[in-house]
Image (cartoon, rainbow, N blue to C red):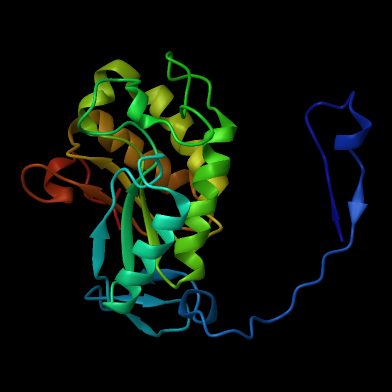
Length: 228
């Protein structure tokens, strides 16, 4: 059984409620569910699943695939095409985009914009629609590599708000067989702090990387151990 407890003790619906939970082994053929989460091999030379099965990262980049610029139906068609061609990863942004100014209408999906204009309040309806796309990828055996936001937005957002954003992404997607890309064309002390926050906050220890410019992810950050 599990029991719900909340810091809001005034709401009886959020406190003391117990329900049974039944856990059974997975019996399907989806490799992401059959072999377990991704990790770095002990020899530090390749990726593998939790059960030791090797994983080859062949990624395609759909940076703006969570927006309504592509319908869910076409998203599914594209996923089928990439799966047939052997792709195992789709890199996708769940945050500020690289090519448009802040709060450009093209950021929106069927649920609206991801945040209010202060970058402080998240719109769950946006992420309800994002969920449908993320789940579709996983159902097809494709790892969603979720990128938190583009680097040049950092001066406007700041570390504290970007950490809040990542706290939400971790709560929403860390239990999925996903990977995390901290930022795009990102680097320096501020993005290092965000990467450290992601590593320390994610209880499932997803793969954590950075999309750099120029150089490598590690060379763009000020600490070597904040990426996997």
